[in-house]
Structure formats: structure tokens, C-alpha cells
Image (cartoon, rainbow, N blue to C red):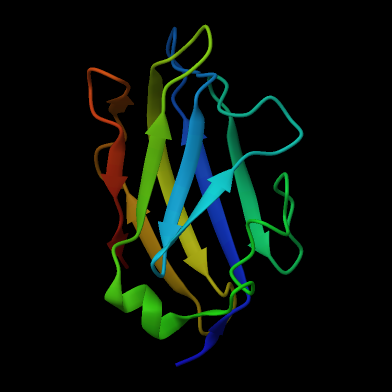
Length: 137
């Protein structure tokens, strides 16, 4: 068991028309949910960005979205599903997700989770479903 000090979340939005969104995105890891947002215009068509939670955090409100407060462990990550949850909103409520990779404690002992690796084509929205679970790699 190791303390989770950092979680990297790479999210890619598809490139087709209407792929981007104004909705909110959350990641669930180790029994806790984190809000994924940054100072840029997130989740736009063709955009790919790595969000950092914890050490070196680059998300908005990093103190509230930190796996060190309260401290999470890699043991917890194995007990709970890892997922991405989408809440539609704004003028573009649907979202065409191309892929997501969550890396817990990036480095030599990292643990990685993926969704849509072999089929990067999932629309999320109020009438399409709002959640995707990630598989441990």
C-alpha cells in the first residue's frame, strides 16, 4: 500500500462537429470523486489535456481536489471503481469523449486506468448516459 500523492487525468475530446462541451467532468478514484476543470476553456473539440490532482496540481480549486486531503492509498484504488462522470450543461450539453487515461502516482510504480482505448467513440449526455468506467492496465 502506498499513499496517493498525485493523479494525472488525460482527457481527449473528439474532433467532429459538436464534440466539445460546456458540461462538468468528474473522476472517481479510491472511493472519492474529484472535479476536473482548469483555467483554460476545457473539453473543446479536438482538445487533449492532462489535469493534475495533488502534488503539482493544475486544476481549479486544487485544495478541494487533492488525493492527499484526506490521504488516499493505492489499496483504496483497488477497492473502488475508477470512473469518469459527466454532467451536461451550458450551450453544448453533449460531449464526444475520445479517451481518458488516469495515472495514479505517475512514475516507476504508477498504476494506470483507461477507457475507450480500442474504440475511442463515446457520446455522453442527458439522454446518452453520463458515466464510463475505466479498466486497470
